[in-house]
Structures are given as structure tokens and as C-alpha cells.
Image (cartoon, protein in one colour):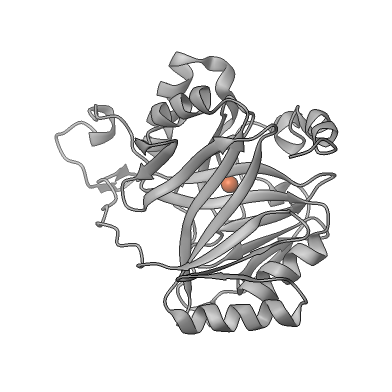
Length: 307
Ligand SMILES: [Fe+2]
């Protein structure tokens, strides 16, 4: 039938112990051996040792064996080698060097989160009571892995691989720089952007609402303010609220809420964006280190070492 979600990311990091502690504090549930689960998505993160930080595998969920056969044929047309296994196929994108494994997987089921009642001019929904957001006390737990952003040394090859090969759809593009791609009804599950080296820019994790984004990031920063990267703000492309933090290996991690959803492809008009709106609608200005992470030079040097 179709691709329907991101299933998982496998990230290589130099210090698995310190990085694992970060993701547990981030709200993911450890399931053993460097693996972590979200509330709705099951095991979605695996950390493994690697000399330099990098995305080792991106997992994509498909419905059935027909999907795997179709994707294998599409990749073969692009002359890309395909590994076939029991219930999966895998191939490497030449631009990001990411191994993409498409697996037959169940569709994600999410219990409904209703918007909290809200008081606005002329419309009082929350009568004689405090906002639920100020009385929430439970630790924030990400609902699912939402998207991944990768630097690519050859965006044309990466876009061919992901769009014509794997079957992602284009939601929006930033002229000459990046493509927002989806394999589900989320506005984007993958962003491939031009970079001097293949690297993992960030992973993004879904929360219930903007208050959970604020609560989760505030808790992370109370323990270590140096984790802050950029937020709170609202993206223009995809519309989501965001707050970016940094793990001990240097990977950015985003809490997000209220992303655009594209349920009927024919009713969405992909846009081509340029200038400031391509990054955000409101919020503090992005730091230089968000656009070009501080360790890019070190990653480029390490890339010449054996992996
Ligand atoms: Fe993001």
C-alpha cells in the first residue's frame, strides 16, 4: 500500500553512556542496550558507539511486501544497490551516506489529545478554573519520533534517492538549499539540506502541545543550561512550535508540537521558500551554531578517518 511513518533512528556517538543519560532525561524510555522508546512509537532510538556522531540508519515503515518490491525496483532504476532481508530492504543514500531501511511495520496508533480549553477575546472556554498547563506535574514524554534533518553533500542525488527511490513526497522546498519530505501525513519526516559534509543536524520528537514543549525544555535547561540551542519559536514551514537542545555528542534534538498535517495530497500546494520565513515565523533569531553546528570542522576532519 504505502509508506506510513518513520520507525526509528540509529545514531552513532562517541560516548554512548553520557548520550543515553541525556535521552532518558529528554523523556524517552530506556528499553536496554542503548535503545529508547516513545509513548506511541515503540522503540525509536538506538545509540551505538561511533568515532564521530552520525546517523547510521533511518527506519521507514511500509505496509506490505508489495511496497518493498516497488521500492527495490525504483532504487534499481537509479542504479543503487539494495540489500534484501526478511521483511525489509535497505539502501544507502549517496548524498547523506545514511542507510535507509524500509520495514514492514504496523501503522502508529495515537490516543487523541484534545486541545486544552483556551480563553480568547470574546470567547471564554475555561471558566472559573486555572489553566491545566500550569498544574501539570508529570514528566514530559515524547509521543513519537517526528522527523530527521540531514546534511547532504549532494542534495540532487539525495532528493532522487528519497523521492524517486524510497517514495517520499515533497511538501515544501527552500530554493537551492533544502527539501521537506514526508512518508506519512506529517508535513515532514525528513529534511535534506545542502552541507559540506554528511551529518545529522537534528532529530525531532512530538509533544502534545506548546506547553509541553515549554515544560520539557525548561526541565532540561534547569539541569544544564548549556544544552540550549534555539527556541521557543514557531516555524513557518510546517507551522510547528519548536525548541532545540543539544545532546552530549553534538546532535540537536527538537521538541515540537502542532505540525501541519497533509491528509489529502491533492489539497496541499507545495511552496518554494526563500529568506527569513524559510526558517521561522517568530521566536529569537537562530544562532549561527544552528545553521552551521560548531563541530562541523571536526566532523569533516573525522570523516577522513576510518569509520
Ligand atoms: Fe525540525
